[in-house]
Image 1 (tube, helix red, strand yellow):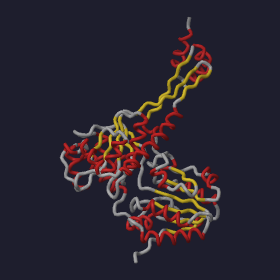
Image 2 (cartoon, helix red, strand yellow):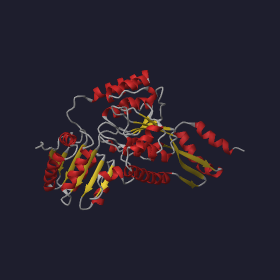
Image 3 (cartoon, helix red, strand yellow):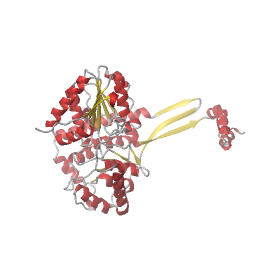
Image 4 (cartoon, one colour):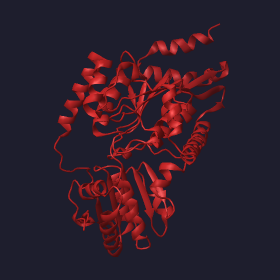
Length: 434
């Protein structure tokens, strides 16, 4: 019988001081990862396509030629043959849901207002070019392509580029290729890891650089994004996936365990936690985790994630539980309490809030229309999930009548004198000289 997975168990009044940090034993320190990524970036900057080909062979065991780095139209056409109509329809459904939601967001932000002779327009201009990173490796993520490419297209980005690692045969998963076609991606390259981020940031003979890079990835991809951010914009340092369930005695223990396991299967570094005010529920969830994870598909990955990063915390009341949830700032927080809407109002730091029994993470990943590229690792304190707004620049257009400027003339004079910028006021004053 497989060994049962065990998560860390804490009481809120006896938490270790660094409980909210995503830490586990690792052969490579953050410093080592950064140094390795710096070397990869330098290699790509210096040697271009040759570096990409060498690194792709080293890390992905795929031998490619420079002429094959870019996905060809016939590869996308053939990818359709490897998919069922249900899969194609599901991707189109997801694309349409995300597109509809993002169009609503875009519509709300553009406006025009006038007051006392001064008119201001808030205008959004699309970024010229964007690179979307889509992870590969242990699983294919066509949904990530949808979540990154569709908001870019809705925003009006003229050049949307995707990079994703190939398999050992030098091919990209057909699901990802078909998703790219459905979403209108302009260029697709078979490059993964830190080397893909370097290529998008600085360019090679084959890949032209972009103005912004978005999308989640491994610790190497995240480190690369942070390192190149001094030269090119990025969305956020999105790392391993996370779910935190906030629950009271009314919650269903089996469903909580299944939601934690569903998040754990992303990878051995995924985070799955429960914070509850019910000791009974905590024990029941632990029981369900142990027996369900033992027979789950991808059980080795699930077991590794639960043992390294899984946890259950019991609190004296919901107020204490909410405080801990906000300290943790999870990527996803699921709320399963007697009054979930009230609890949701108190969550101030999270990438996405999922309320009540029928709102699992899987819904938001594939069918709600919201974006699943979200801040992780505590970045929910300061970052929002990816949206159409990340692919635009906000520009204000100001127009004043003579009367409008005259009405604020004295206010401008006071401030220019206070800041010792007399020529600022003279530029205003001159407009009223006879």
